[in-house]
Image (cartoon, rainbow, N blue to C red; front, side, top):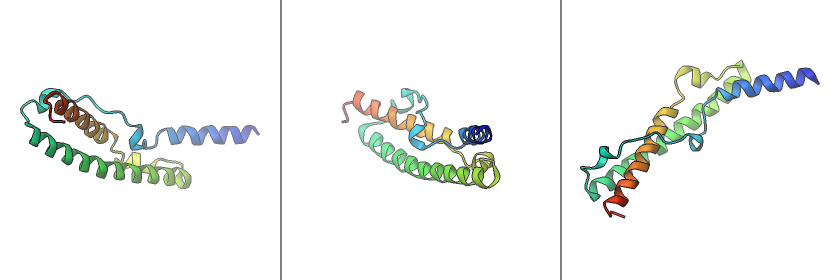
Amino acid sequence: MQKNTIALLTVVGVLAGCAKKPEDISPAYISPTSYQSFNCKQLAAEARRVDVALTEASAAQMQARKNDTTGVILLGLPTASLSGSNIAPQIASLKGQKQTIHQTQIAKHCI
């Protein structure tokens, strides 16, 4: 019983170092001044660009998460996170950009 508990705690500890799910990553702060000079058309285009980039980054993050899980099971190490495949900071930035663009669109009465 005690060996099982130790093994379970070890696995949980290693998995905690794995790549996060994209939906669990909080947006980074992006200054609204970044988009102040954009008009409504430019904001819409930028929103589309960020959405595409976020979709691609989220897919890459999910793959890193899968690779980490496989690495933990086979080697006992989150291999994707160790190799730099974990792109949580990029996802946080894209989420922050998306949020700031949306807020700027509202402030400029674009939507």
